[in-house]
Length: 92
Image 1: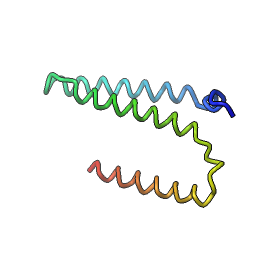
Image 2: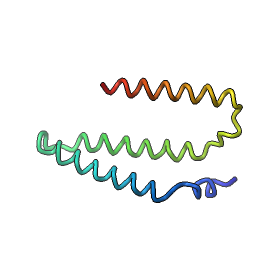
Image 3: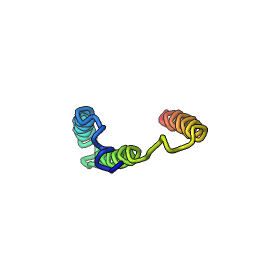
Image 4: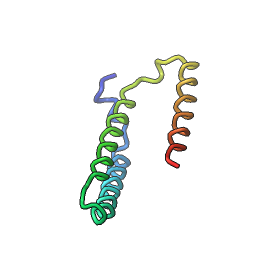
């Protein structure tokens, strides 16, 4: 399966909506932090995470998860779930 055909299955409308909401969030962060500090450090930090998240998103599209053994997929799924919960806990 070619790389181009893997990207054909992506919901383009959903991706556009996510990036429009991300842009609105960047505007909100910009207006909230510029008044306090006059700098755009938080906006740049958020933009870096958006770019990194985009690379991770497209990287996971390229991985063929059906070629991985089912027991290993279960272990990966549990590890990702626990990691996600831990990272959410770090936000408090």
